[in-house]
Structure formats: structure tokens, C-alpha cells
Length: 429
Image (cartoon, rainbow, N blue to C red; front, side, top):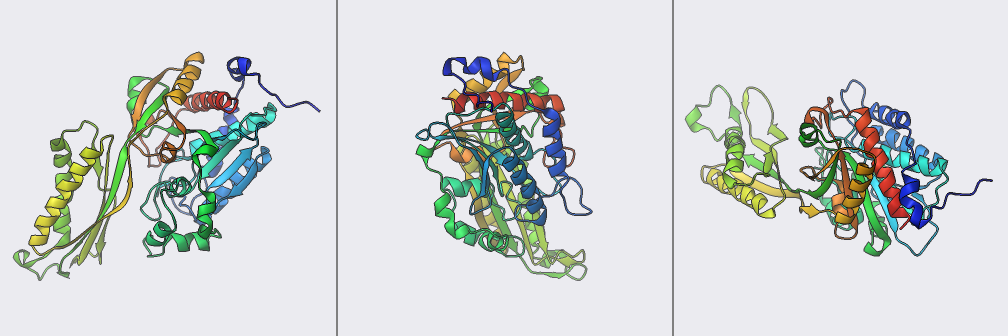
């Protein structure tokens, strides 16, 4: 029997640069999983804890197991695949991204990072590489917040930033709590405390993701080394007025929550420009009217506002502008409710891991640049407990969260190759 490859420390960089990925295998993973969608739908719709999610999980678990990993699913649905290292006293290295999507999203958001993890496991198996540290690949659940409006729920639970109280508070559009949804899916959220990550158990975490913007494409760079991730606040606003007949109610006698919502939504771009940050963004991405009929003045309108920036102060200023306008509406007879659904602070990533990613990209002759991420990612949840690195590949046309989301195969291959080499270096430390 051929013995495992144990790479001598002084030969790590030379040895890892000889490793090759199988890009056709990676693309087949992406095609297979992204094709799992509800019948008659378009794009990729794969909410966590759905039947589509269950089928995708079966594929990931089968591939992880086939690549020699010890595989398990934790209390909230994150899938783990671990290769055991040679030195038990050393902490592990994590690699992963998420498996879920937005409604009618694209084939690469999150899934690319999961496929990269699967390919790293296969290369380790084929090359008989025995890491010094445990290598753990993770497919996170409920990153997008498509079910409950709270992003990165799976990673937040592992990081101790969400627990049973939040799972029992968060509800989907049908009013069913995250706790109940997970139980029905066959999970055991009551054991969430047993799955908490501890800082001393994790040496580093790396994630590969599509950029979801146009910075890389416009600059001509093939890879982005992420230095920091924007903070985010997601607000849910409910406005209540008086429902009535659309034709028989004079305009001057109305208390129309849709008109009130329009006032706020229409002013958001103006407020963003006034606040003075070059990075601040705010988005109304979801709006619901009740009863949602063309000939009825709505009784109630609910919508979300997603606010992001590297500086918490600018996010706070935007919240204040919204609150001031809501108070004015309240004086005009509209009942208002403003609730913060989810928050995540801006974070700086590990310069050490970033330097390793840059060194490997440069050694391969792959153009790269340092940048920030406007989108929040699972790895951001672990920056206070370990060294975190995030690598971007370009999004064609900057498109993401839409069916047209795409990245050139060559850029995908470059990203996974650099990630593989960086992971090899870190797990051998």
C-alpha cells in the first residue's frame, strides 16, 4: 500500500504548487446541485430545510463520504466533513460556504465555495495527503435568510451569535418559527450548545465566493483578496392605515399605508447621498401589501430595508433618517412598527491568511487585487475567534442573486487552485 503524502514543512510551498484540481469535476458538482429546484421554477431556488435542500444535502454528504471524510450534520443543519490530522493537539482548519439560495437566484452564490471544499477533499484523497491539522469542510445552512429574514443563521449558531431564543423568535412568512421548521426537517436544535465552536479549537477559516459585484471585472483582476466585510442591519417596517374601497374613498380622506411606504422608499437614495459615505448602500428588497388587491386601499404594508457600510456610524445615521420619517407618518395617523431583524458588524479579515492567498495567486501568475466585500458571508461570523481569509472570483457583469449569475470557468479554476494551495499551507502549520 502506498503511504500518505506527509509534506515536510520546508517543502510545503514547492509541493503544494504541483497539486492540480479537476475543473470538469467541479463544474459537474455545480451543474448537478444547481439543477435541484422546484418544478416549473427558473434560476436556482433552494431554501434551507426544503425538499430541494434535502436532495442537495444528500449529494454533498455522498461526495464528502466518497472523498474519505468523516461526515455529520449538526443541530441546525450545517454539514461537516472532516479529515483527521496527524497532530491531535493542534486546532483545525475550516473551509466552507453555504448551500442555500435566494428565490430564483444563480448557480454559484455559496455553492461555489461548497464545490471548492468537495474538490479539496478529493485532491487530498487522490494525492494521499495527510494534513497536520484536522481539515473540516462545512456547507452552512440558511445563509441567505430566505426563510426567516435573518442571514447567516447556520454560522451564527456555531459562532454563538444566535441560539434557541432567536430560533424560537424568527418566523417564516407562514408564521412558523425557525425552531419548528428545523424540528420538522429532522434536526435537533435543542442541542445547539453542543455544536458551539471554541476559539482554541479553530486555527483558521477560509472561504471562496463569487464577488457579486463589478470591481474585479472592471479592474481586469481574476481574484480578489478580501480585507474586510461590510456591516449590515436589516430592518422590518410595518405601516398600518385604514383599508377601504379604491374608488369610493376620496384621496383627502384616506390613511393609505402604501402611499406612506412610498414616501420612505422614495427618499432612501436621497438619504444615502446626503449621509456622506462613499460605501453606504440601502435596499428595499421585499414589500408586502395586505390584502394585496388592485381595487383595495391596503390595511397594512410591510417592507424591509437592508443597510450596509464598513462604518457602523453611517448605518446608524441611515436608521435615524428612517426613524425620523416614520415618526412624521405617525403624527399623520399611520400606525408604525420598526423592528431590527438582523445585524452584523463590519469586520477586518486576517492579513496573514490574505498574504498567503496573494502569494499563491502571484506564484501562479494570476492577477489579483485587494478589496472589500459589500456582501456578508459566513466566514465573517468567526473573525473574533480565528484567522479568516476570503477569496473572490469575478461575477460576469457584476450580476448575482439572479438566474444570469455566472463566472468564467477559468476564473473558477483559478480561485479553487489558489484556495487549495493556501489550505495545504495552513493545515501543515
